Length: 437
Image (cartoon, rainbow, N blue to C red):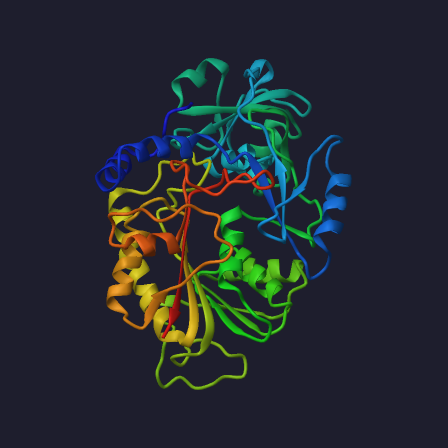
């Protein structure tokens, strides 16, 4: 297993708040992708069975696509574990950034914007070794030779065929675009779904799909997604509502709002309204009703709210960047508390709130929930359906019963409910559901 590339103080932080096995979990997270591709079906436009047939026709012969019994709108495509692939950069090497490297591990090809360095003589058609720059040690446009790789902080991802030359990528005035390397022999073999059934499927991590079902949105409801980009949960909620009602999607930057709206348009969804705003400051007691129901909002405006909170992302798999600093790690619980406070004010009595993160840190999960319950007596934990994750960790403020009511997906845990139809080797994730009394 490759070593962890998360900064040392992050590992120390985790060791301080949980047992030592979580440091090993971080190493696993940093190196290995989940063993399956999870496809959420756009059931507004097609049935799961119809999409399954179309996927099988689109993928390579012999591909396997299965339905997840516990989640009715999900298809699973199994991938390989780590394969015995040797680097053969005899015709050159290409180094990509961490985000591109993570995508390659999950089945993507290499696109030009993700390349940071390459051998000087790479031409279209050459077979090249592909490496990820895990510590941002390369300068964009740097020329690398096979002998240089030993001195760089890179991890091998597999081999591929260059679709662009070095000149195409670096010696031009405009930013490079398009397919740069087609992965022919990747280290991890997963389905490549770029451009496949774009209106009918959305690639989404399994716990994220679970969170949408846990919210249990109903047609005609008014629902708030407080941190919506890139739009996976907002579009899923709208789909579960049969595109009837209103989904308000909020995010802080205009480009993220554009991504949400573009995804909604691609999937044929019309009930989503997206606004650029800071969800900590959405409440205004004297807010006036507007025709487009724009922020700020009056208290108790929403039937249900989902808060996929900004977090340390220590559950993401794979992960090749250096991770958050210790200062950043300590800032997330403060931000989450502020967002939760806003959510309570915006939720109607009897309404439901789903709080989730993609981290394994208990300070952002169990401890955060325990603190929230102490501060807001009107909010109670409620049962989640479906419930396929493990129970919460004891010792961080939740009672034994409360630990049973939250879901923790965790690479270091062995208590996930597993079945033959849906292996839960997935990212680290946490879900809590509340009802306002």
